[in-house]
Length: 410
Image (cartoon, rainbow, N blue to C red; front, top):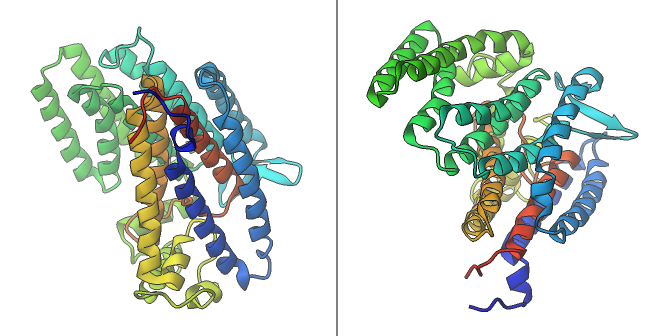
């Protein structure tokens, strides 16, 4: 079928308008969240500037030659690691994490742009014809690529962003053709680590399950022994995390395990967000009429808890509409990944989709009180220049891949 040169054949309007709709919801919510705030009224103006600049970035990326992303994959990964190291020494501490760098009056988070470097380099690494992801050596090398930025981000410490990096690496490795045993090798340390959060007995029980699984896979003694050692080491990472995490981050973990442990401290925001979401009813209290929002019960609600502004002032209808727009965007990205020009393009979009989905899932969960409060913004909706620009840059990459695809998406 001959490719048409109509606009919809070269520019994916569904993705673009879905993003524009989320940007509009974000701007309206930020306006409401800062309306009665004496020191945050200027945030809307800043977000408008970030939005305009990010749209320019999107179109610049869209028009780049399609070979650009493979060329910059390794340099972008290396530079992102350098910035993650620099921020540990020269960064600004905000909310207990040294994750910000200043450039004049502007600040940015290197970790936001490191996500781009990781996605591009992993896509390039995993599509190398010399690579066999089901070979233990290649698999461990790939895990190391993902682990290095995670380790640097944990030193800041920023647990939420570390989870995003781990999720991106895991899904991209799986999508590249990882077999069942390889998936077990990647997932098992995380299972052990999670079990160790709840004490020694759950840790031992999980370790026994890992040993049973190793007998099931019937790998050679060296391979099984190496996997077992990695899992035992993962069990002791919890003690390391407790030492490097700030007290408020430890309390957030404890509040997740026991939500009633600190209702006026680490659990306060989550409890107030649930009140805001529940009080909105079917149609909401109306724009600028939300008590939790306008009376500032939730500190800096325009960032991580922006979704409960939607829930309180626009109700169940507004909340579901927002979720549906995200669903349309996710399905469209998944659809485009199937028609990418090559495997590199497919893996790149899968990585981008994973990033957005993890942010979406954890942020919505934070607002509903079903996931820990770990400081992840809602893509395109929450206030923040670094996250918005990096997210729009990623959408620009998606649209570029769409423009250079071989097949038309119906």
